[in-house]
Image (cartoon, rainbow, N blue to C red; front, side, top):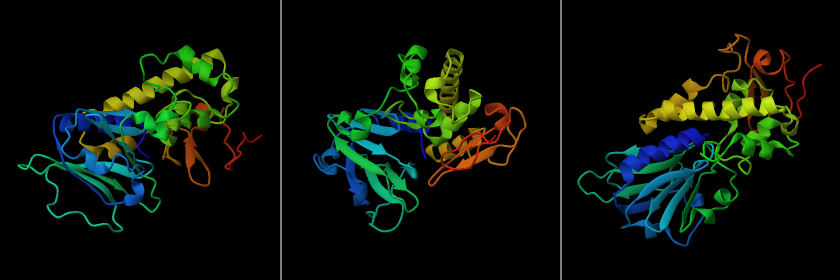
Amino acid sequence: MPEMPEVESLSRFLAEHLVGRSVARVQPVAVHALKTYDPPLSALEGRVFDAAGRHGKFLDLAAGDLHLVVHLARAGWVRWKDRLPEAPPKPGRGPLALRVRLGDPEDGAGFDVTEAGTQKRLAIYVVRDPQEVPGIARLGPDPLAAGFTQDAFAALLRDERRQIKGVLRDQGVLAGIGNAYSDEILHAARMSPFKLAANLGEDEVAALYAAMGSTLTEAVERSRGLALRDLKAEKKSGLRVHGRTGEACPVCGDTIREVSFSDSSLQYCPTCQTGGKPLADRRMSRLLK
């Protein structure tokens, strides 16, 4: 799933390639992905993109007083093309959900929004204000925002009786962190994913805050300047524990373990994070005694 670092890199790439260019045509293919109807997608045509940014995991492409907002869900992506096919896209079972053709007839450039797999959760909005998107309206603070201090982070955790892994992933608490980077942050902080957030001591909060900032910042910097087609591969290669069950921990050499749930899994290092004890592999996991 694209998380904040990948969406940040997408927005930077699109800012370089879209700003100042007009929209010739917007072609919806997967109608189920379109979550708003007023204004219509066609209202973007003839407008000029003037900014590209993000809100957590939401991509925001601004064109005048309208915003094309995309949530890529688990398997969505944006694919830039210097020359789009001349033939209009046909609805079907393929991954294409939306095509945006730019107004320069000389090169025919534009981009496709795609979604792989069978779980179709991609969401596309056209709004006058990004806050009209329910998922954006409920977002917590961005962990890389200049004003997000350690004290602000501690205040968010103070009354949280949930496990820290779930708190980090909750978009209403923090914007942009998903399954992969929560694993990476907790590994960097040497913290069990099942530790209760409210029970963290001052030193633990400080370590977690520092790990969150460094992990996300480094992920963004690794992606800087990469082509869109290379971002997913870069994310995978940069992860130290997530998705690496059975491999050696790059810090201590212990075997990376996994806890599986109905629709996801987490990875961790017992030596680095749980005092050498493996976690029980069930939904309500506890440290094995």
